[in-house]
Amino acid sequence: MGFLKFYLAMVLLSQLTMIRSLFPKIFVRHDQTRNDVSSKVYQNGSVTIVAPEWVREGLIQLSKHIPSGTRFDVYDKKGQFKSIIIEGELSLKHLVMVARSEPFNTDGSINYANYEPTITDKSVIHALKDLVRQCVIVAQDETTHYGGYPRGAPIEQRDKVYIADLIGLQFQKRHNSGRLVLIGNDLPKGLLDDFIFRNVVEEDKKSYKEADEDRSGRYVKHEDVYFDTIAYNKFVANDVLITGLPLNEIANEELNFKFLKYGTGYFAGSFSEILGKYIYGAVAEGLDKLFSFKNQTRIKFVELPFYGYNKSIADVCQKHQIECKFSEDDALKRTHPEYVNAITNCADPHAITGNEMRYSSVDAAIAMNLKSKANIFTPIINQLIKEEFIPSGVGLHRNPNISKI
Picture 1 (cartoon, rainbow, N blue to C red):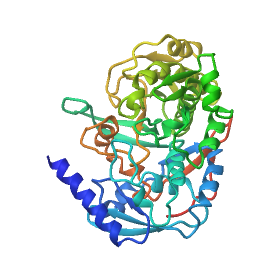
Picture 2: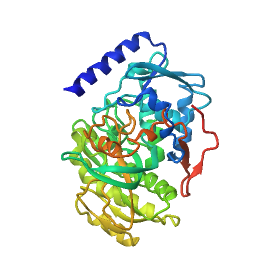
Picture 3: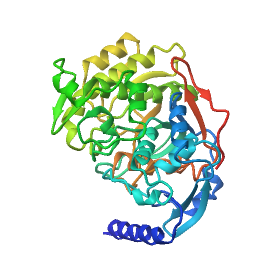
C-alpha cells in the first residue's frame, strides 16, 4: 500500500512539473535524492559505461536531434534540483542519463511527455532506448547480502563482486527494443533501427513478405509478427561479449562469470516461450566468441543460474577448458571458493540500475544487496563514471572526448 501511495505521488509530481517545466525532464531513481547527488560516497572512478565502437556513430546521429546546448532538468521526489546542458555531441554518459530517465518502470511504457517540448519525435525517443540497450555499465562493488527475491529474507554476505549492468531485449510493448528482432507491417520505427540491426546482425532486415516466404525455419510466426531467431541469437551473443570483455579487463582476480537468464521474465511479454527456447544457443555462441579472445584470462568459471542444463553451452565451455555450472543459486551468492563473482544484472532501458528496488525484481534485489545500493551506476550521482568503446576484434579503447556533466 505504501508503494502504491508513493507511485501515485510520483505520477502527480510528474504532472505538476510537466506544467511548469519548459525543458525535458530526467528523474533520478525513486528512492534517490539530491543529497545522494552531492555525496562523495558515491563518486567512484572505477565505474565504466562500455559499448561497441559502432555505437559512436549512433551517438552522432542522435546528436543531430539533441544538439549541443539542449537542457534537461533533473528531479527527485521533491522536485527539480539540477539542470544538465548537453555540451558537444552526445556521450555515453548523456545517453544513459537521457534514456534511463524515469524514477522506475515495470511495464515498458514510455513517458513521452518527459521529453517535451524539445524532443517530440517518437522515433528519436525509441532510438535512445534502443541504443542505450547496446551499452553495459561495469563496476566493482561489495555485497552486504544475497537473496530476497522472489521470496525469503536476504542473507548476510560481505564479499567483493563485479557487476555488469546489462539491458535485455524488451518485448512488453511493441515500441520496446524487442521489435528490433521482429518483422511486422505495423511495428513502430526507431531512428536507428536499421543502423543497429546491420551492426549487430551484419545484414539488412528482411521485409514481412520475405520472412513470410522464407522456408528455412529462421522466422517464427507469433501473433501478427515474425520473430527472427538468427537476429535474436546475434543480439544475445553480442551481449555476452560486451559484458565478458570489460569484466575481464577490470578484474584483478580470477572470476566466476554469472550470466543471468535476462529478458525471459517480465521483459518477454508474450514471447516468453520463444525466448526460453532460443536463449541457450545464443549464449553458447557468445561464450564461444568471448573465450576465443586470447586476452580473456580472468574468467575461469561460468555459472548459469536457473537455466537448467544445456549441452550446447556445456560443450562450448569444455572446448575452451572453462568450468561450467547450471545452478539454482541467487545471483550474488558466492558459490565458488576460489573465484570472485562477476554478475550480469537484468537492467531496464527506462530506469537506472535498481529500478523499483524493495526486492521486487532481480534488478531491484541486486541493487538492494550492494553496499552502494547501485548508486554508483547513476551518472547524475557518480560524476566520475568513465566511458569506453570496444572495437571489433580488439580490447577496450578509452574515449578521449568524454563530455562532462
